[in-house]
Length: 244
Ligand SMILES: [Zn+2]
Image (tube, rainbow, N blue to C red; front, side, top):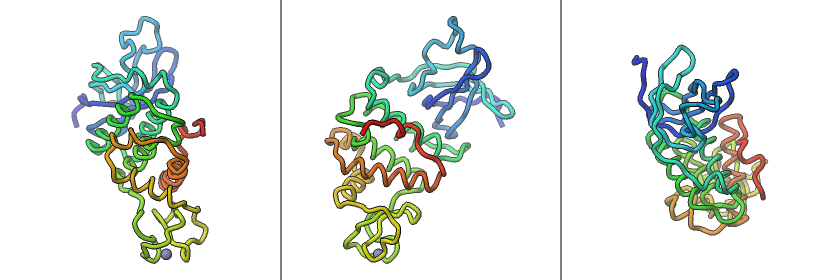
């Protein structure tokens, strides 16, 4: 195994390490999530500048240590200037980053998920209308990231009996929609939220980025988040403080 790895990465987050260092949480195109030490980044004279700030896309050389990587060089590829200035856009970006960082087992190439994450950041950087939770872009980023991870919600037919009529519930534990007869303890699903989920799963991200915000989208986000939580055992922190 090579000791040095060249990767393209989105910086999805970071946490302090000791007095001067940080651990950068990266989502790489080459092998998914990687946590990497960035030495000296918290010193005012740091040679890293702002290159390893969250949401930036960088070309990195990583040294592969026993348990962690260390960033040995970083070149900025793309930075999204507006994301940090607009709370709703930042929430959309943070959800996409957090989903990418938590949905995929590390070590596998993730070219499609990486491209999706980059696209979501680029769209969010153009601005988000209304609250993030109601943004079709947020729902699409989450649903399409779930699909990349093999967790595409079933939206066409009841996951229990197969009927395509009267789909009135979403059963996260069963992976999709259910009809009235099979409802059980599934969450109620409105027709508008079903339509929003279907659009999020099927339409291109740039089309959805231009679609208007709605309460139906926010309901769709709740269901998609239910599916995410069922499979990962996690809740998306980026949604916790999102404005309704
Ligand atoms: Zn049914």
